[in-house]
Length: 359
Ligand SMILES: [Zn+2]
Image (cartoon, rainbow, N blue to C red; front, side, top):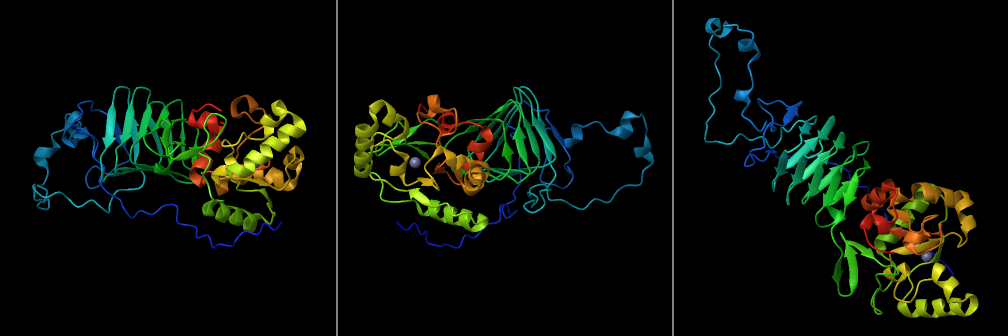
């Protein structure tokens, strides 16, 4: 059987563009002020401290100096107090924040917050990126409190979010664009069911606990095929599809033939009961060689190490049968898209653990 994948030009989008820089206002309606905003130009940049800068002690007067009496008057440009300064293009790259215990900040709709350098959200502190707002992480965010994502978050290559805190994803993993490295705990939204199909944060779940309707699925996902093609072109490995989309009917025949051959108790550890196969989703494929030895081939080793960079995860890792319900399958990959695959991979968790669903 030929397993030719239609070649598709994959255009690598620029990971980041500063096309929508807007001012970030810490939530001044909350009186828990006092965060330390460092690295910013409080005079002209988009960033402002929660407290008016005039309340900061003046180093000159702190020294008891009365220089001001002798100073020449300074001609300051006239600023219309009723006109909001246009700061849409001068948010500096290089802001850091420190949010302390008990402090809560909210980025509101239309606002973009840009972090680089080393920022910190301490235990008991929280930052909420509200719906319509955006957080761009270019540096290292040490997260020991809570980061709630209701809007969007991008984590640049070489940037990181680490620590003992939690990232709460309100709606969908599509809200996160991760090229960097996240080791902080990620809390997904609760599962929802749409037309008999279960999703967690936009990720379709098909396993022994969450089945698909009999009529679900019609073929392999185009995005999966493009990613596979990109992986093949990038490495030279063939990644032959040994098994791609399987309809409910095909899975039914396959499963019961395994049962006949091997007994139910064995068959269920490597073959899915009809309606519970990831192959019916069109988002999973068996590659190369359906044998554990595939893990020791050059191609299999490359796949295990790098497939997340192309949007895949090894869905049934070694030693996780008690969680996934399946034996180690180094050949079976699940397509999640690059960002989510990277988050799952870097978490070190199975998909069930990452999404907090039973297997
Ligand atoms: Zn498979």
